[in-house]
Structure formats: structure tokens, C-alpha cells
Amino acid sequence: MTQASARQTAPATAHEGQAHPIRLYLVCWGLLFVLSLASYMVDYAQLQGLLRWGLILLFMALKAGLIIAVFMHMAWERLALVYAILLPPLAAIVFMGIMIAESGYTLEARETHFSAPE
Image 1: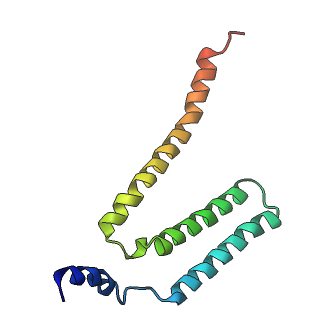
Image 2: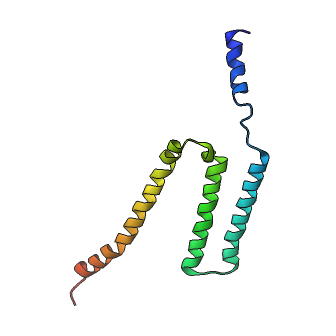
Image 3: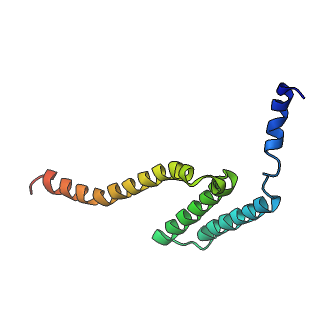
């Protein structure tokens, strides 16, 4: 066997035995179906207010996490790579939360200091 033909067959043999079982994907599909059903049930039950949006966001985050873990293979990646991919969006979410908490104070200060005198 020549060196060129060895390089052509090497990738095919390097990935043997690394396929995930079909059962994993079927279970994931089933969980996504159940989470989507639960999300639709929130609307069917006509929940309102913070409970409704909290549940919808919870189900959305669970579905996104499941898709990232299984279909994007993040569950099998090195921890450093997982941190490199997931920490920047999480930090952005934390900073957005801080800005939302601060926005009430800023609005009140503007209304107090920039309103027309009575």
C-alpha cells in the first residue's frame, strides 16, 4: 500500500465506532416533543403574566440546551471548549440583567431631574 492510499483510508478507519446509538437521538427527539407540548400547553391553559413567560422561557432554554448538548455534540467536548463557547453568551445575559435592574433607577432619575417644574 502506498503512502497516498494510506492517507485516503486513514480518515475512514479513524471514525469507526464513534457513531452514537440511534436510541440517543430518538430519546432526544422525544424529549423535544414533550417540551414543545408543554410549551403549547402553557398557551392552551391560558396562563398569563410572569408565570406564562417564565414557563415559556424555561421550556425554550431546556430545548436549546438539549439541542446544543446532543445534536451539536457539546456533551462530548472538552470542558475548556464548552466554557469557551458558553461563557460569553452567559456573561452577556448577566450584563443585560444588570442593565435591566439599573434601568428603573435611570428612568426615575430622568423623570425627577428633567421633568418640567409644576
